View (spheres, rainbow, N blue to C red):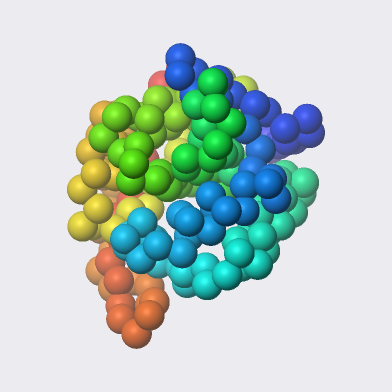
Length: 183
């Protein structure tokens, strides 16, 4: 079975971006992302109602990272440390060399290749450094921007689950995309 250790925290860089640990200092930006119905439209999770909710979310991320069960990076530009999005590896299955990835980006930065660049760097880290064999992404079937991003990175559609989860008074579909490490 693979060993996962996020100590020290892996700061990742790409051409324009720096992916770093999310801290309590990011609470305003995390709150802005997680409290917006528009931004959270395709993420079936309760909206943050207060900055305390956002801080609790950051603490949950920290705990998972410290326990090596998940990792969530702040997406920032190299020349500005402000969190503009988040990208993660979660639901890790070391016994299967597999993990799920997810991401969220402030609308001001969408359509500019930011998440394409961030996801490319996380894929590289997951396969080369962590030695995962596969990654998956679970998305809302109506989230065409996310689907497009995954296809750009050669993820393939594995499944479309009909009404497999229940959130906010309705049953929701989920589509699973995966990427196999060919190296």
